[in-house]
Length: 116
Image (tube, rainbow, N blue to C red):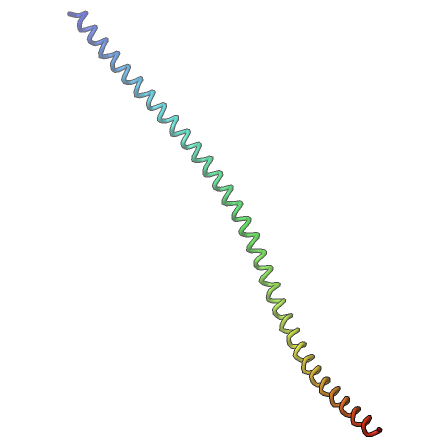
């Protein structure tokens, strides 16, 4: 009977040892999977940070260019307004001169007619 009890204890001990080893193996696999996932997440986050920094730099550069172009645009608009004013003054002066030329040509024609 002692042999039977010893055999039963040995079987139960073997079963418990097997279950413990199996549980530890699953635990190790789970930890390894988590470590791998964690590394993948870290790599992904690093890649996302690099991408974010790239786009931030690009955005900052474009914003700087946009501000520069806005300043240039304001300056050019002011310059266009000055040219418009000069054009209007010259157009009025041209109109007066054309009118004066027409008057002088008319007077010249009258004098030529009178001389004949």
